[in-house]
Length: 221
Image (cartoon, rainbow, N blue to C red; front, top):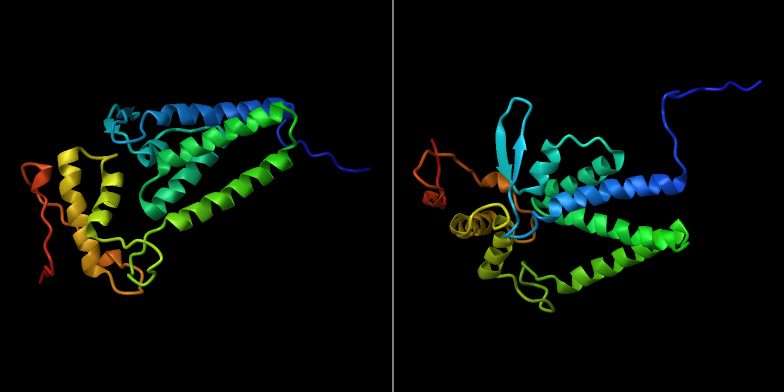
C-alpha cells in the first residue's frame, strides 16, 4: 500500500489555462505599474512605509525592492529584473516591460492553440537574434577592433546620461555624467576589468547637488 502525503489541504488548485491567466495578470500588473517610470519623462512614485515614512523615486530597482510582492510570478520577474541592476546599475524597468510584453504575446499564441514548447523555442530563437544584433551594434572601448566605432569620452558621457537622466534632474545629471566618465577613464587599465574600488565617493555637506566636484589623484593621509 503506497503512502499518501498531503502537502497543504487548504491549498487551491486551478486548471492550466486558469493558472496561465493568473500568471499573466501578475506580470501585466507589474508591467502597467512600472510602464509610467520609463525614460527621462517618467513619473515619480511615492512609497509609504509601515511607519509612515515617505520615499519618492522612479528607480525601478528601488520600487521592486521596496514593494511587498506576494504572487510567485511577480516575485520571479522582480528578481530577474533586479539581477541586471546589480550588474549594470540600470535596466530594471525595461526588463519588466519586456518580460510583460513577451508574456502577453505568448498568451495570444496559447489561445490560438500553439503548443508552449513551440512558443519557448520561438523566444529562444528571438533571444539569439537580439544578442547577435547587440553584438553588431557594439562600440569598441579598447581601440583595437577597428571594425566597430570607437567609444570616446563624449560617447561615454551620453551613455552615462542615458542612465542618470532616468533618476536625476537634468542639471545634476549633466554634471555627474562628466565626473563619472572622468573617474572611470582615470582608473581604467588596458585589457583589464575596471576596478571601481579605486574610485572613492565622499559625501560632504553642500548647498546644492550641482556643487559636486571631481578630484584627480586625490590622496588622504
